[in-house]
Image 1 (tube, rainbow, N blue to C red):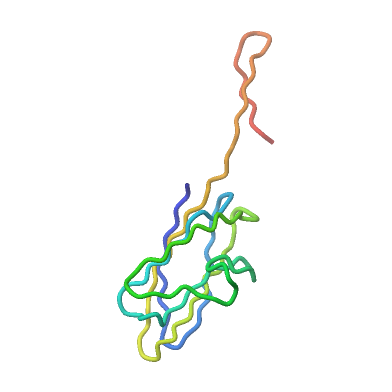
Image 2 (cartoon, rainbow, N blue to C red):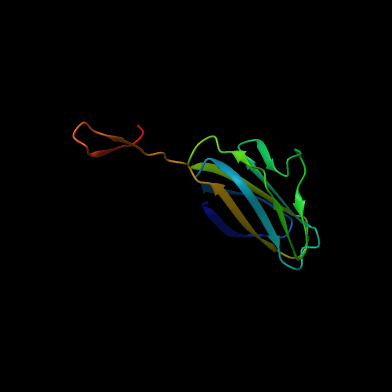
Length: 128
């Protein structure tokens, strides 16, 4: 399964939208790691266009402090590569805060077919 990892820093009193690209058939795992410090003031959500993927309920966010929050949406990617938007809002008025985002996707399955020719050779047939 393809695995992706990014770090994002959000300035105080700021909202940011970060663009990431992933490949595969489905978004299997999302993990957001909050280091010590944000005290729930850093909020994060994952979108495809206007569709919110994590957390599932629209208008909600993942927040934390010195913890990792993990979700397994098993969300089919409509295209590959696929552009996801990571929305982050830092409600802290003084300090910037960082989060670590890890995504894992299900790889595209490629099937290979083989057949025996009249001459007795094995012929490999790739899908179109």
